[in-house]
Picture 1: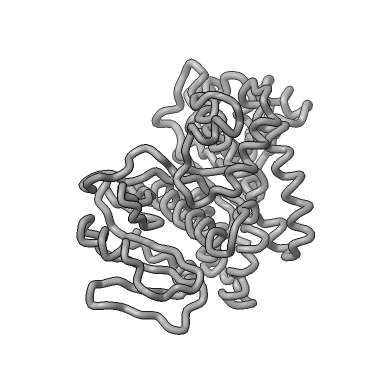
Picture 2: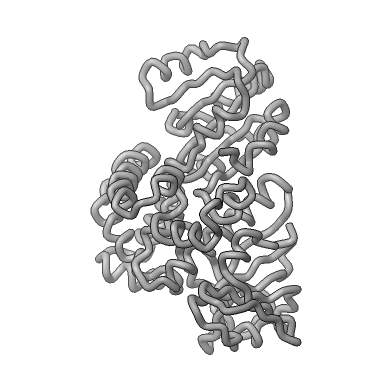
Length: 379
């Protein structure tokens, strides 16, 4: 299966160092190997490959070289900068990693101006439809994504039994191998408990003080652990938008999982998590591949009115998105916030809907499966 990022990465391979980051087992190495026929491959987790990295003894006759999990190497950015400044891109350089390669700034030098970053997400309905991988139909495919998530191996296998076995080992490797490899962390059991707490609070603004009481630690520690979970792509944060909204909340974010199957809650909450991941994926695609300044927020005021998502372009509100499982009555919060924000579109996504609707106010009520297969963000 072709991934949507592939043609954009191929176009840039001779221009910049390519960094591909994203959750573990989303297919980063597979994507890197599919960029061309002639490449060399070195994985920092393999001892003999580490020696080749130290010696810089990869095959320069190949079209490009893949450095896998290179962020685990001390001063890896200095290492890349030296190669780029000394040899250029002959061969091209692709770096893959299951951590946020653009956020680690502990090394003393920067790759500024020398790389393009691409963030690979799990499969979603839009990418599957784009690559013509929805032979069973978009409704059936959406149900599969809700039940087993979008990571390629469990999604393609398709059964919940396989997914639950895969999920346990997947999360364990992240928390017990990836995290300690990036930062000295001793409180693994407490971080595992934090993950379990977050699984039940998807879609709700997070109180750091409440989590700190549950975990018997400080707010500062909770924030550090959440940042670590973000850095290894277990969770992602959606912050509240606050510009031009009187009496708005400005601090409490919401957290979602890259693996929708981790969510504990009713189907509506799981659908909200799936929509959040699909929107983030599309927003980051616009940033990484098109150079556009899209961003993702939610909207809530102190009176408790809330809309699940707001997409902005160049810091200007563009689209409000509310998610419902079966309620096709217009959400009052959209009617409140849409004129206040001056958005171009307001959409209510419903999983079980008899027919699409539009209203004189501009509100659209759409089938969730159809809309997610298209994600018309006007990017």
